[in-house]
Image (cartoon, rainbow, N blue to C red; front, side, top):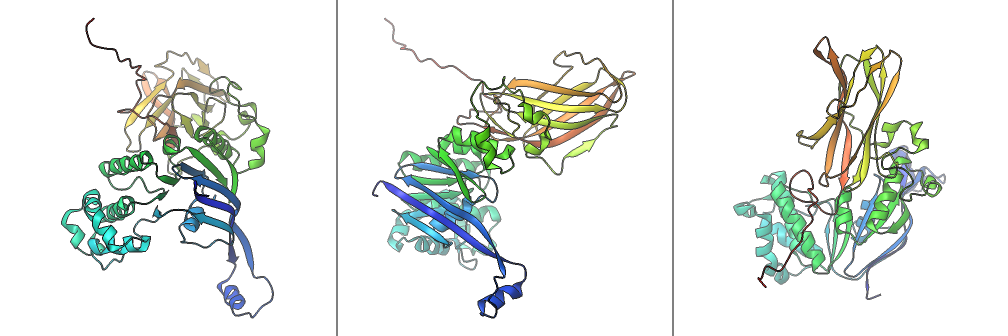
Length: 434
């Protein structure tokens, strides 16, 4: 047991859902013998262990129970059944600043929060300079927290949690707070913890961070544990889970061996499905054009033939669209563009740039266009746009465009400088003359 930092055994969390508040009141007062609630299991019989010095990630779709597990481990929630054992002092980055008193100053809240975590005033005294330097909010630490901007508030809360020396760090989607410079400090501190051999339990939707930092990953779905294993294996399984929209039973039906499809060629059963339903689509996309040709489908396809919004850096993938023509058009141009979240065009191409002859397409016909390429973009989220345009009597015409249609999430365990990786091959030789 000494080598185990966190043990979770047969953990379940059930909530009672009432149709009416009066039903809850009647039951609490013992005025009814009928069951007035529905049972909802946020977690059902989940078991796993975290060894000392290990970084374990928990991933899963929204509502899978990831945050619920962390709240039970840290004592914020009580489980319905099962056992939790924690061997070591915990610092948790859950809801940043949840324990702050808005009337107190920043300094007073540092001591308040540290005491709540379980540290003595003397221990906090030793760490105070590090906390204030990390937060970097100047003389505002002497002002009431209610006067802080939201950025200052989370900086101080993060600084308290990360700089008090815990044996176990628990993180729930809290690394990307503040501006880019503060985020860089957060990630550096996280890496420092890992190098020091601290135990880390990490929940994130950022699959690149999961792939980069975690030794092992637990995959949850709808409150159930699906599997656990290496980061790449679990990320692949998670992508399949997104495709099947929560139907775990289908995961066993489709082995995902490399080479099953030719890099980015869609699986047969997905060719008849609604492609875009498997993507993380943007409800606020910009849709415009004459519509004499219409983009009716689009997809991102990974190297194993799975439609997914997440592509692993260094692998082959395809961008696809299906276009229906309502009028006869000569030489239509099909295009896609990748933007960052700030709206900057990062890359893209079209059939004209690629010197691909598209010919004449008659009214009523459809075309499926596939762009195959290698993923060299840095690991982060991007926005993908699609277009069908052309020239009529030397005038440029937009037939249909879908701007920022869906997310393209690049998963990477190695990011370099800038937008894309030059895939440098490094050699180091002895420079001494013989």
